[in-house]
Image (tube, rainbow, N blue to C red; front, side):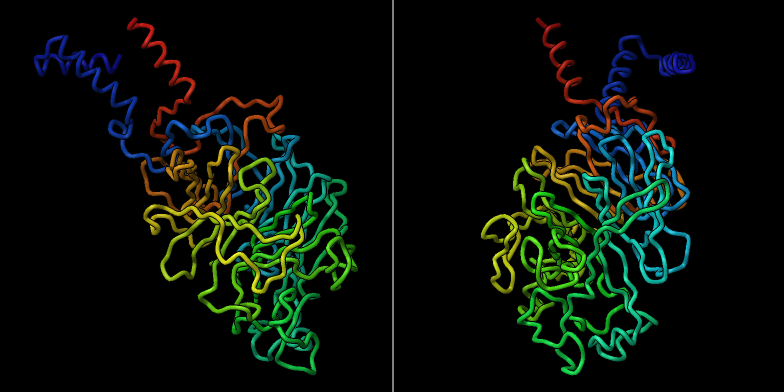
Length: 498
């Protein structure tokens, strides 16, 4: 009624006839459908772009950092579900086939306060009920960054491991290079959830069991680093922060029974054998591949093991190293979000690496480890337009598209096979679970990673997937339509003309 009255007043004031008014109304309607931002203003968050060719039927999961709520949205930017914890996000979250959510939480204690801190693993039902919670947070061990839910119900996780100074120096660490009370090493734990708040450690691996140093022949681990690429140099890159390694992702290959982790500070990925016993994982022999817990493969920065120079470096503070699933293009290769932090020029890439093998899981021991460069790389046509210095993730879809999370910007987007952006979404949730208003500048809306789940994923069977309102306040309309609706309209128009 208000619009009709305004239209009548406008018609009288401008002395327009009905035909002209209909033409004006048609133009306005066209603008609303084709480019609503011209009418309502510029969208700055929520759904920014959705073009024909983007994956329509699926959902995207993300956990805004410094917030307590995890969100599932559809490709139109509408909220499908959300889960609220009493803990801020501990970076990673995964939707399980039964519809439950497993997420990491930021422990409230003050032990081992470094970037990426978690300390809590929680499991919620689809409707938000807390089913299980486990604390891995002490002054000696702290879960951080990432974890991997296994098919058998166990969880693989990465954890900081605090080493006293005297122990570190007894193992060959150069004196005077540890600036705090402890040196922070890394462990991988496999835990089996029990009850509602407990777990059993059923397997573990510690970097501390796989070191080499060439500074002091009277100390432990002495050897020629260049001849032992299966071990890690205890003194590489000194001086260094106490959080010396900073693993930031973990993935598991069930067929190979291997684990890949991302070593942020040294710009490497490592593959280790999971088939070992606890004792074998602490040794240099045993397991399916005969090397115990030593590295089966490493890649990204051969200077770390004295088999290359800085110009041989290919990874730059990378994140989200994982195997490409079976049945996908480049299956079995490793995809990495290569942040580019430290390149000669600042830009990020998504790289696919094909480790050279004699047969699946058996890596060729040419040193430095090959290949010399990635098998495939995505970067923006203007490289500097795509740069996320930290956090971030990338996921290959079944049709060859990529879903990418530019972490610091809270930017989630899909790239097609021609490297064109066909879908884009800006996280509208800021620090402290503050919901931002569309049309304003997004701030403090970082996202560590996002995950796309297809509509046929088991988690969605029997669930209410009716879209709710967009998350952002005062959402500027996007007029999101899927390809089927668009094709139906085109067909109906053609029939009408006939």
